[in-house]
Length: 563
Image (cartoon, rainbow, N blue to C red; front, side, top):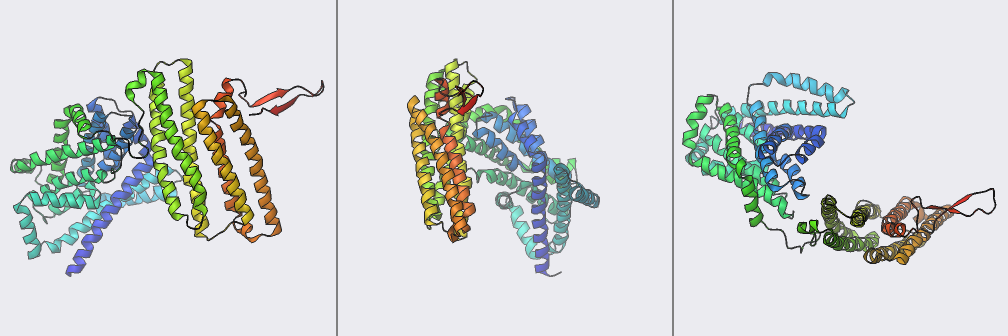
């Protein structure tokens, strides 16, 4: 077999292994992902329970990195403490080794069984759960087949003098295999796939056991870097758990690398098969790290908090006034949350004011700028909501409880406005420019006028929120009814142009009506700030319908209240 054919087969086997690993992970997450998230979200502060949870989740999803992304989502929202997150990650590192353990045995005979079961489950079942189980079984089959391809392709390479020389140089220094393993694992973005590859090569005699162990040590470092690459720009709490997990691995690799000569005879006694030795070493290494560092997670959490302080609040969306120490003083906590809601209102107002410019010919750059603002909107909304949720667990007076609830409702409405702008209006603008469409002069004038009125509504709503003024609240709701009539008139005018055969109106009819619909939805969310104020003064009923004095004694007429 020629050299390029051998290399092509080797690369094909590696690519199939990476794809199959991704396939299994995708199937597991789609079938059981929500259950795994709930299990992590309900872990206790007991390190051992948290560690065991991490083992179970990572073993199922075949990835410590995927588990890390679930953990940081809870850390970011302050649903679990940092020490608990570190304990879950220690368990996740162990869990990912169980996949390597199971596939290091000679199970090639199961490939046709897995393929048949997976095919019938995926193709014949109408259940999404069974379809994903079929995906998992097919992925496992492809993983085993890919390892066979790699071993088969390596048979010719073992006879190459150049390859022998390279391996000899790698075996002379433990540092080189560690660095190479870390880099390749980061490139693979899968420590499971890389270590399975190393185990197979060691089992085939292609690489010596000391070299394979060095690559495994490097893989444990590289897998710690994978989620860190996704953490840039994230809150300090997220970086703490990821850097802490990486620090545990680095310390473990340094200690083991210094005493590796004592571990080799022990591994040979446990199992003479080189492939099994690599799998056993990988598991024992991560178990040892968990045993050493699990009792120290609280101390590590304190050190990480000192080394990685909270941001100064200069970046958009970082809450500046949500102080946990004030949760025992509800009035001050509500005041701080109200200031954050004002910051959120300001960002949403900017998005609303600028979105009309995204429909202009040069609106692509404007769309990107507006889309960037949705990130701090989501971040502030999440922070305010969680802060107020924690506040509601405190003993509150009826008045403070009402204020807290109203803040949560208004904050949620602001976030919905941001989503409508980001996920609907900006998409409509992009679609319009992709298709090179243009509104009629009359249609664009109607949309612009309606948008301007809703921007004014947004500004009035912010004032109502700050002052709680009853008359302004009535004005806000009254204007909503006027804008509803303007929306109807705009739609009727548009249909009139369609009847007249105006070409621009015919081409943009769906866009025109969708924009009007979205502006109407935004106006409804804006007006929500007025209802609690009007309800408190009895100016609006719960049903928003008030009984009108009958015109005669036989007919009862119901009419909508002025709100």
